[in-house]
Image 1 (tube, rainbow, N blue to C red):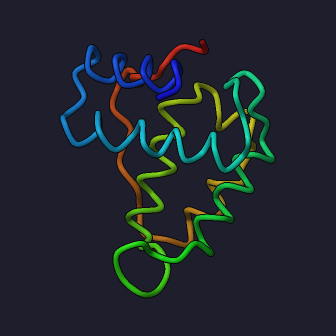
Image 2 (image 1 turned 90 degrees about the vertical axis):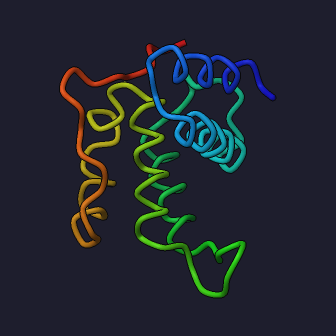
Length: 118
């Protein structure tokens, strides 16, 4: 496991995220970094987020036929929001526009629990 993913998992645990989030969000972060061929989170650009979101819309499901559910895609978007502070500012409205057409995602918690840039 990459040090960033290990640190992210430790952050989620110390910030009080539930067991499911502590398991799922680092796996999603790892998938994002692998898909975008990134080794340093500092190198993430808005086009990486856009490409990954597009990839999720076309990716087949692993456990059943068809594509990923909107709920599962929202989990991925949420993981990126936690992993990448300020992603919305840097990515513009790419994800916001796409997410509007789908069902609403998780609500923001007051005082956003975001991982500081590593």
